[in-house]
Length: 242
Image (tube, rainbow, N blue to C red; front, side, top):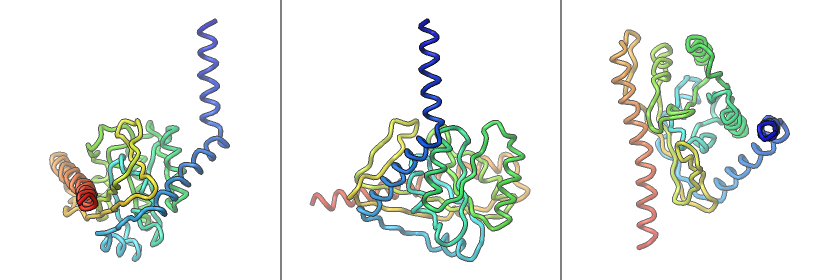
């Protein structure tokens, strides 16, 4: 009897979680909160000149960031200048994030985790060839945190697309109880959104050892951009307390 009751409770939670009406309500609430936090705060956006110019002239690029800083992608990625596709998993949490990002102007592709890698890459490369830019959390969807995966490098090798690292930070944030301590800005904050181009090219003849070296280089660049946003906020706090 106890097993049946537990199974029924789990089934009820699953039905509620998969209910499209419930999902839309949750997505709307989270998107509304992010908009409110952004509009009541002061965010400085810098380092985006090269990225904005690429997207404006329909040059496909790959934008990468840590999953922890993903919620501000709608304001970091230049969605007003050209089509940008965000990639998430088809799992429940990934679908939720993808639908939230849609509300900020990003297209979304939910990638099935069991789908063959070759098939996924062909789909992505086809979209890049058609002029879409790609935005992806390179340590998602399940970590480890701040460990870059090499998939974007393989896309860059095949498409010759430039790669840009993006991050944000704010002096007042909520840290969610997730594997990466996902950051949500609090309203009436001071924040920065920063971008830097990854200064490497992935040669078409790159070997596995080349890819590993480049992966570490990309990881270092994303960490540097992320740490710079945190340092800028730290300096702001020190200035405010003087």
